[in-house]
Length: 137
Length: 137
Length: 137
Length: 137
Image (cartoon, rainbow over the protein chains, first blue to last red):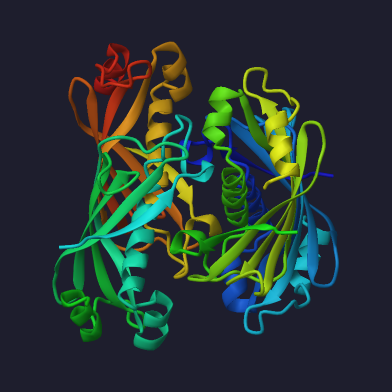
């Protein structure tokens, strides 16, 4: 089973006093990877918003900090759908130094809910997306 | 002539590797001060958007970095309208360490244009705002 | 039992496309509140770093998103030490709209470890801090 | 004459209420492009700091906003050294939509000073860097 990964470079904007990535910025990296994962399946989030009237909203984050990412590091950020229900996904996401064989720096479980942009309430994940998640090929 | 000022504290989120404020983040501080300046005159930007269909958009920034602001510094950020035309303002803004008598760390001239939210084109600054700018009392 | 709270205003820098606070930015708000909580007890983090050679590093975040904070909202962000061990604290933190009687928007449990700045390894929380946490008066 | 360019994708983290890139975030994009430009010449900024005891600090920014970059846009960000003196560079930088043939969205002139990390004062740009700037091949 392949996991989707996306390369992220650490710039000055990302780090704090200690020269390590600010603790809130991993959530930026994770979102970039989720966005690129959806794009890799053929889904652009602005199209989903305009055409299907849905958006994805984070409901819960559990994040563990193992080792700090540092200025100028090249990171490998994964996005793996570990489970899904009618209107939500569980993403298992990890940050490795350099590549998928590198040190594990950070891990998060992120629950994302599919929301109707008009009612701003949870709605079923469209079948076209579920189908791609089950069979990406 | 009084200048409007707003206190800003430097947190970990604001600094980079050197423990000094990231060069782009002064624009956040300047916007907070402009927002609070408008609020002090009685104008809330979300109301302006909904009631008058206008928003303020930055067209030009000239910014000089004299001395770095550091982690945990308390800053005094000014917002002074130095001139205005039919559809734009020139703000003269400064960042001082601690208060208006402190070291001058940064200075910017920022041109803000009044834009119609429907056409997304420049429009005249509403008279109610011009009047308050000329006579805040 | 009083909980410490800190007022945060939502500016343009904090929100995303939907006009709601970007999901990673609550961690900025929570850190501001923890910093101000420590300051209210008499501890400045730059002094702790220089004088006691310690810093506080986040090891774990569990965060629940109930309702979105919006542009221009005034928020009340709490920081409450729910438990502590030899070298770590558990913070229970919440974001309310307007004040402590307002709607609960977000809740997080954040584990913070005391780290020796020289060895970059966990070290006991200094007695002077534990004493203040037990008896703030 | 080739100009260096770097591709940047606009994510949720970058935009504000209007779904357009927050005015301060162009400075992040410009710094990514300058960093990658230096890397393309063989210079890593963390190595420059440790080996040559220098860092690059921004002294002045002049930035013009022509058209907004939007959520999910792919941008082409250039970094071109337009002139240099003993201890500083002038960068001419631009943001285009999609690629170098796309719409011009933003333009900035950014003055960067070479600083000695020990004295924190301007110092001459090392000859090895000047040589590469004059003759990248």
